[in-house]
Image (cartoon, rainbow, N blue to C red; front, side, top):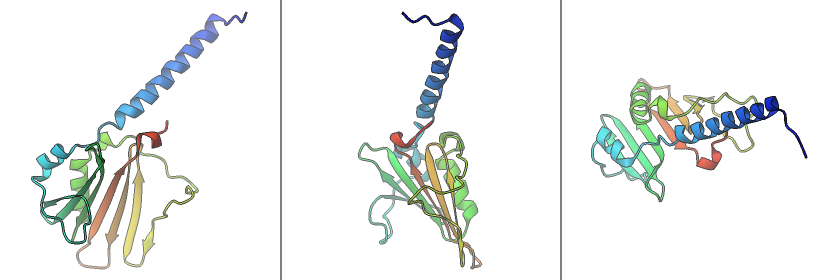
Length: 165
């Protein structure tokens, strides 16, 4: 028969409670994915997509195009936003559609990327960078060699099995 001291059992109980909290918090934190009807409240009714968009639902907001991809369950899988002239407009739109409180914690940049990871950087007139959060990844692109700065962001939610903590 194994006897566990009161101090050890309390410590184990505390560790289990903390782990349970973080797993539950992580799952709840990533449940804040916007729904199609919320997107429509912000952007209005869908519009006809440009010819180069093969699938998805398109919206227009001022000079920005927004394309959403839906999972088979109807939840939003990704949001692509592009603007012909302004990263500032792209950022404002992504902040209204995907508030920072729904993204989860921002993850530290790895010192060595995972195999198969695209490395973003500056190539000629294009500047690319990525922000990785607990619940999603945002890949930005700007073409900075023009008077106007065509810009885009692709927001892709992690699958629940990708969320680790």
